[in-house]
Image 1: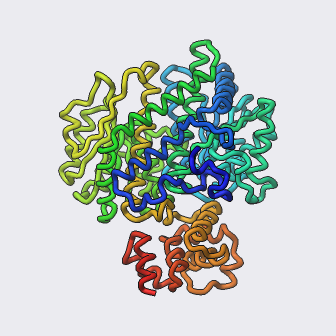
Image 2: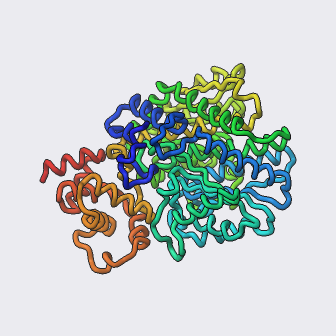
Length: 592
């Protein structure tokens, strides 16, 4: 049994908020060690060990496989009546981005087969949230319900899949509640990674229920096959609470398993079985194994990215097709997770929004965050690019290799810091003339046994593999930059109520201070004052998070004040001098 599975381990926290014992000292690890620790954490997604005294169901368990079969059968029903039916995938942050990626990819595939596109996605905050953090809408259950109602107008059958890794997002809770009140049309599915009894109990804005009550109602309706909860335990995240990592990976793997099993059943005219579903889960495990067989090159890329970020340089992902989208998603998640600047890590896709297939179309006029085409990179970034900046190309043997070579040559005129993540097929490789253009080329060759179904499946393998690699690179680079304290993302942006509470819990954990002392220090840091006014003390959490969203290093500043008893000004000056937070705390203690 894993250490975190014991009922005595961090008992007050749900799995998704627990710290992972494996990575306790990841902030002091070197690049090779970081990759090994992340590999060990990701292995927990596919853990097959079952213990009678464990209260957790794993992804490979019979009960989870059976739930996946039932959901696949609902997909099959919808595919047989495409005119009147719809499958809606919805979530906030990473979960919404995975929903977008799957809905658009599967619609593209259906279009290529000259069939009706039946997938739709919803992301809290709209398409802007695909590239930037839009935390406020996540706290609004009524908005979630409203967007779902609008998306499904006129449909007779809707399979709604709401994703909330922690069983906590009010936006998704509002949608599930709406489905439960309209079961004649909707079949709701909840995907997450905590048991129902660990779902969030905090009251929601203008809403009569909490998330746990809705999850319990879903479980109740599952007995009558009217709703489904798919919530395997995949273990705590490598960086505590960072559900973009295992949460995002497991969501993608499970949804592809369920949805493609439904498609397969329609085309083959054979019923979905638990064996089909478990074979697909094992295929995803194989992708994990093949990807992490490249630990040396992955560690080299991670180390280079760390050098760039520490030297005030940047990391740029230049991708083709959906690999470009994976790059954009990974880059966008670093801002809220690590308090990173928007310029630190950025992703670009060859043809920009025309290739993204997002609902709201071209957003490039909204602002610089939304300039995501390769031409945007060439025009805005390339002229000032230097060897301090790292560029990682993301492509496969199926992409236009002439286009790839031309861009590499062009970028190579300004920097030699060029690297690539390349997907090859057995017997069909990217020529040496292309792969030899890079300082580091991480080539992954996919066996033909994994490719026997279709190119759509192969692309999903490449996407998952690329996600694992980029998550490791960007996480490792921020660890090397000093953005992680033990295995906590201490420099997170406190932009919604969930993150406000998480910040206070972290401060309590590291300083042994009371909840009130931690909240006071956090508010002093947010409002940049030595003493709190009555007006600040009486403001609600929404007001605090709106203010915090405009500030840098809010949590580290509060931590240093609490650890050493120094003033706000002293804490800030020590953080200026010591970007690695453990060093800043030590310096402050020496100073005091």
